[in-house]
Length: 469
Image 1: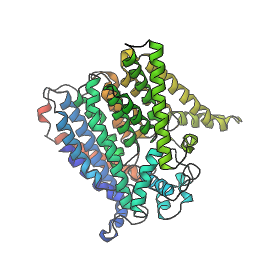
Image 2: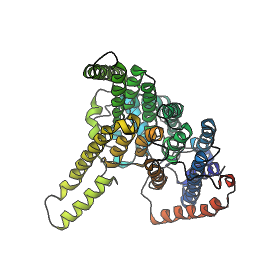
Image 3: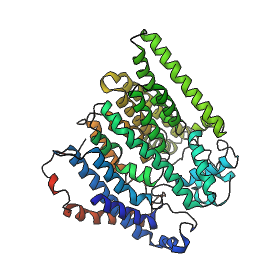
Image 4: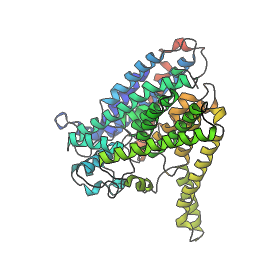
């Protein structure tokens, strides 16, 4: 109930402080556009609700680790209750969903999304896309663009209907994830309830996959489905599903390593290890290539997405490598060095190399960690050390970690804490906040503190073990 109240308050605050359409197209007859003038009040409500939701999730973790843990089915009921208020409201914490609609409309109009940004489309959708992305080609694969084109073609210029269409696509990915995650966790020897708590009910999923409708939901749903199929020995299905995930966002391609490894292991009784490995590799690559060719031919977008993986990254991106690069650039500029302009690109390459090293180390210890756990650590390293970082990128590695990491391990502990920390790094409207907006957000969070301490819904949990790591 604490989480439900928080979700309702967060969704209500989003009506004034969320990532609303620029034009008053949400519901002019209801005058919802006039709520913009109450943005500060909306921020108070949104962060009041966010604090309650985070506290409820943390308490639920204690219950999962307690003497009488809830069943996976009970957790899914809680997830549905917490998600429902966010489903019915405008997007929060990002305006990417408007970019998805514009890119889908470009595909429908026959424009090359890998050569030009939404500015080539024009029309009412362009006003909804943040200026920084209006001239930027898309880095997304043809599988996602086909979904975006379908939604955009159905909704035409109706922005609110398009937003809810893209949210339906994201929710389909979330549903696929929560169906497969408990099965994958059982295969990895992890309690399904603990996996669902960390991998599906955490605030990042609710804020960014459900409310924000990010395409990472589709990528993760297909990735977890593919890993589940591979664990069950259905390797053809696994290779196809993970390739489709890669054709949404490229980092999912690391999941094919799990398919190759498990496939060669299944071939080992009849074949030597080198022959089994080569055959598994050939079969996996063949299926991936065939799936890619088929989807690309059906979509008609071409293979420009490979080139667009180098899509320009915002100079103000707050990834670790970009931040260190900016500090280095400023120091070099103050010293009058000509190398200042190369500082940020150099540090981004250093970050990618560091991510590659971390990935190799994780796979080197795969026999001790397990394949799914190693994959989760690899994707986490890529998200944290890559050239761009957004809060929802942490979910790339978090969901496999939830399915495979030891229940009492430190990785779960730090991952859970990182989830809480990242919930406050992006503002509900998707823009950089002003000082007044920060003050309103802090006020809302502080108002939630006495409610959390006075709530009595979890009295029975006193004396249980600490949070479900």
